[in-house]
Image (cartoon, rainbow, N blue to C red; front, side, top):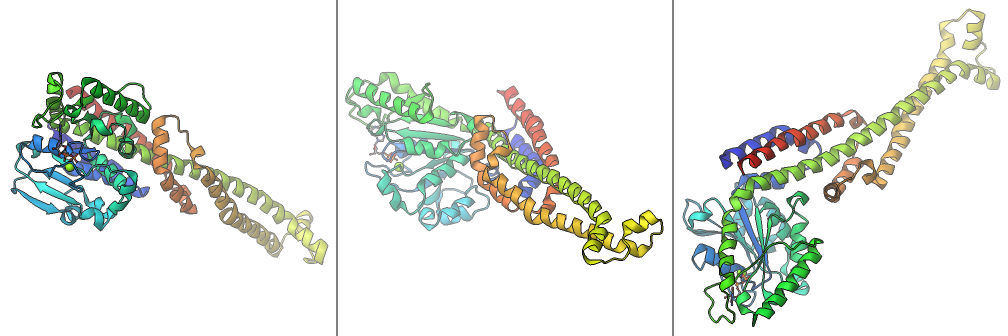
Length: 449
Ligand SMILES: Nc1nc2c(ncn2[C@@H]2O[C@H](COP(=O)(O)OP(=O)(O)O)[C@@H](O)[C@H]2O)c(=O)[nH]1
Ligand SMILES: [Mg+2]
């Protein structure tokens, strides 16, 4: 299977079948489009001084990134390779380049942009891949001084990345909770943990084996606290062979660094999977929105039908008896339609009052519906829009938190005439895409693996 071709096919199918719906429900397929646009991405995050930049330099075989004990490098750097030679591109250019998937990062402001750049280096493995080096997490107080929302930036990069390496060192094994939360929230539930790789670096600095085991234990405890799961994911225990003064005999862990490197090199292979997971999430979000709109429209139509029925019945009563009532109170008209009907000599003028009464009643019913009962129904739905659908799985519950705001805005802006729009037909299209197109794509990658 040619991955590029497959990616193109997925892209055109999404474009054809889903984009009108994304537009219709005012949701953007933004990150999806960005992901489809460029090459596979590996994001490396973790505490400062955990050895991220050292590790990247090792992959490149050159000192490209600055390293050091203090938080030396406080920038996000995309490192990649293309045919146009080496060079640095400043953040302002990167976020304006429509061919790159980073245009939305403009929203994080000047402070972020001045701490963002793209480095082109000559490394064959980066032709079809990019690595992102990130500034490390600081403590909560210092975090405020950055001038941009660091956690959100991390989340946005993680959405684009095919693989996220979370790196920490034995001294700070207990402090990665925020980082983890920031990225986990942005990843689709269905991806499980397979897009996140945990690595504890600088293990050569442990004073003894028991020191190492203690750090590892702390880390496992923290991880299980964060993931809410009892099973511990694989944690690569690594160190940079270039560092001298090894207090421990690290023979047993020698291979782990290489394994981690291999894992990173294999990121392009995860890509199609990642794309499908993202489509899965986007389309399921869309489905929730369409479901709510379809339910609310159906409710509104039922309410309208009832109002029309009631209006018409009252209108009939008015039609026949308005003249009688009027006559009783005012003496006018001299002869009611009912009386002339019974007498058998009806004249056209006898129908004037009844018809006016009928039209008036229908008008009042219409006004009542549009000005009072429909807005009241929407208001009720807005009180607890969650009740409009069944959130039967954790995945759907999670997606709901993502789309709730959009659903609310959609409901608030719902015009009366929209209740005739074919939300149900849209919903059917979405379900069909999930059950047929998406499954077919999943089948195809399964048959290759
Ligand atoms: N002993 C030891 N030191 C390391 C290791 N990896 C990195 N360092 C040192 O730790 C410091 C921080 O590394 P750096 O790569 O800049 O960390 P970053 O902030 O995560 O990018 C530097 O002085 C490195 O030389 C390692 O595996 N073992
Ligand atoms: Mg660094």
